[in-house]
Amino acid sequence: MGIINPNDYPQGLMFSDEIQKQVRDRFCNIDHDDFGERVFFENSGGSLRLKACAESVKVDTNPDCPGRHQKQADIQGAYVDKGYEDLRTIFGTDKGSIITMLSASQTMFNIIGAIAGAIPGKNMVVSCLEHPSGFDSVQYYAEKYNLELRVMQSNPATGGIDVSEVERLVDKDTVLLSCMYSCNITGAVNDIPAFVKAARAIKPDIYIVVDAVQHIPHAAVNVEELEIDAMDFAPYKFFGLRGSGIGWVSDRCSVLPHNRILCYPLGQWELGSTAPHLFANYSAIVDYVCWLGSQYLESDNRRDLFVEGMNRIELHERALLNRALEGTDKLPGLRAIKGLTVQCDNPDLTQRDFILPITFDNMDVTSAVKEYVKRGVYVFERKSPSHYSKRIVESFGLDGVIRVSPIHCNSKEEVDKFLQASAEIAAL
Image (cartoon, rainbow, N blue to C red; front, side, top):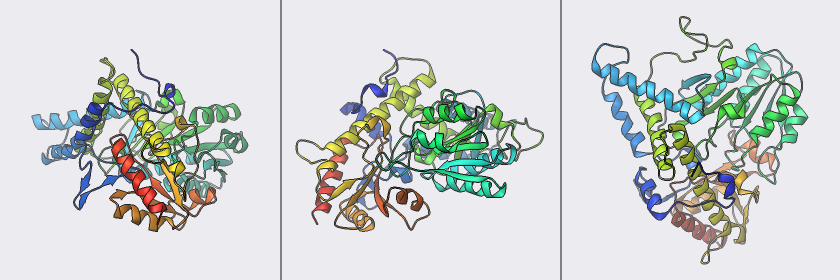
């Protein structure tokens, strides 16, 4: 049996109870924090952490640096080398260059700046759904280089961007197209292959940048198949540690002028000494996903096991999403709770990550979030006064939503607790 195709299961496929137990056992604080039991549905703000990632900080108890003559330095260097290999496992390529910085936002600004500063043209295209690191970087460099800023508008029915927006705004003078893989407020997965095809039909050599910070914890990605020029993600939203952001750039993008140590190859973007424990953390993420894949697929190929693991994550989350929307024999789903609205409720779950934007008729989003917290369910509001939310929620004609963002280590029992809390809040 080969790698499973998530599109074959439009309503998802849950883990067995045994697999779910093993998955949950690998995460820290899975059902509690320092104040007691809770359901953590705020993973878009920073996901539940793998125990192996938390333990990786022990690597830095040794002061040795890679490249020295002692054995401990060799061990530190091995963590770094394996970490780079595993980042390529995540991106699905041995081509191009890897970039590590303190945050995904720094990574995005550096990539956009390099492209905007080197490629001739008259405009840059970005979507209204971008995180500020994506939108603001394009706006900043458009202003710096006197380029027109063109903004793709959202579809309120799906919560994403239609390919027609790419066709409307990209032209022969477009320097770059930048778009999120999935929206961090609605969970809508944008059709990046269709975007690339449409954009390159208009301008074959256009540079295309994809922010995958929200999508990469939910599904496998392959930058070679996408035929894009850059992608970024944040390990702390992918079951890992805070303190780094990861980028990948294509071969042609990697050699654009950028900050670099001049004795190193032109395509190298890394600056300064590495942090071995962070690279051990990257490998711990991949080790875990490969372990999960190995429960379903026999293979010696690390990328194949990783893809199978991510596909199983995607399917389990889709099944949980379907349960949250439709409910059970004993509990009404969100779609059936009077006084509650699921915003941007695309019926095609294959085009959605498990991020739910909801509102209540009887209270504002901040009050509702506090009601959830009273009931031991942690979610978060995204509303228009915040620079991180304003442009996005207002594009849907709203002033705010409650963002509900579980991940695969959350269980159907936790979804049921969330549904019970939702029904209680709607009835207040």
